[in-house]
Length: 221
Figure 1 (cartoon, rainbow, N blue to C red):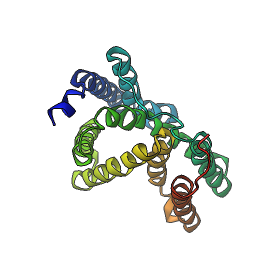
Figure 2 (cartoon, rainbow, N blue to C red):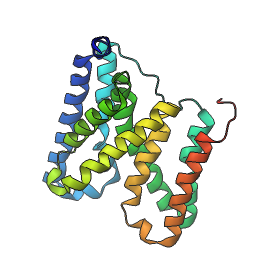
Figure 3 (cartoon, rainbow, N blue to C red):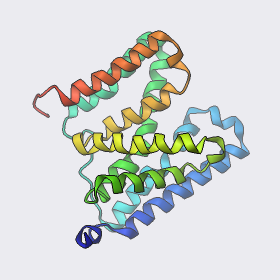
Figure 4 (cartoon, one colour):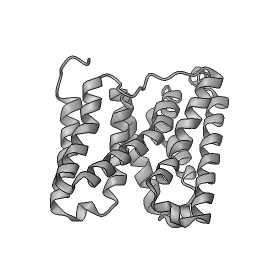
């Protein structure tokens, strides 16, 4: 067990997390000072910059690496994971909805590059329950606007997401797949699932992803 912990670079993790927290605080401050910005897509995307920038800086300074990449074990599966849902939701709801879906995936990637791409890979030698719990707590604290959330409901959601998206990362190594799962949850919060057509599309997309990655065995490249 001591050898496992020796391979974890605490300084790199601290650097990643401090940067992620500072940038999160900055966006929260700006959002509170200028509430009209909250509806701006560019500003919404900026709120997810902390984890990815923190990961890049930590990996550059401390020479840390990750095997979790944009395309992971399959380029074409990763591209299809993003393209097909955006096309489906675009057909159902129009071009604006398709673009909104894509933006949700982009936001998901900004966060997932940090939480899964860097942090989970850094902690990968720990037992699953340990790194899932560590990431969940750090992720929870990163969401500093907790006064706007039901903590009792939010913690189990993040715990499940840390396990579920974490499994996607370890199984496929595809950060685009992780981003898609993260993004579609955010996308669904816009009230679209109250519409039966969107609900069916949402469920179909999840099934499509599972079949694509876990049941279609084709050359990975």
